[in-house]
Every structure is written in C-alpha cells, then in structure tokens.
Length: 104
Image (cartoon, rainbow, N blue to C red; front, side, top):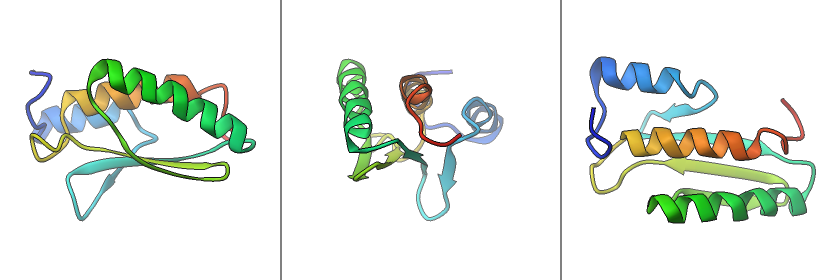
C-alpha cells in the first residue's frame, strides 16, 4: 500500500475503519470530522498544533473554525481522493484533540 495512491475497495474500507469518527463526504472523495472544544482558545490551540503536524507531513487540511467548533476535511488533491496520507493525518489530528474535546 503506497502512501500517496488513492485508496479504493478493501484497502479503503480497512483504512477508514481505523478512523471511525471521520465521515466520508458523499459528493466528493474526502473525509470530514467536526470537533467541539470548550472555547475558542482551546480550539485555536488545537488548530495550531495540527497546523505544525500538517506542515511537517506536507499535507494540509481544509478547515474552518467558528468560536469553539472546528470542521476538518481531508483529501489528497494531487490524487483526486483519499490516500494513506489522509488516514495518517486524521489519526494525528485525533491524537492531538483527544484530551481537548468538550464533548465525547
């Protein structure tokens, strides 16, 4: 399984099972997750840490933040869909936010 090849079939099913809190977006080949934090400060702190990890991975999320809500979308634009890089970044994001979420 290559890092940058688009996932399909059993490979895709297996990879998405590793990140059950993330949802596929029906109208595009991408995954998304919404996070709710205690307040803006905590949300922004998480975003800062995510940004540093994403930069090291050279794989940047699409995201939006309104007060304490962060919505993250991942896809590999160069491959036209979900790759192992998206799965790795989703796992890294999950680890970063694990202790910061307001509701579980």
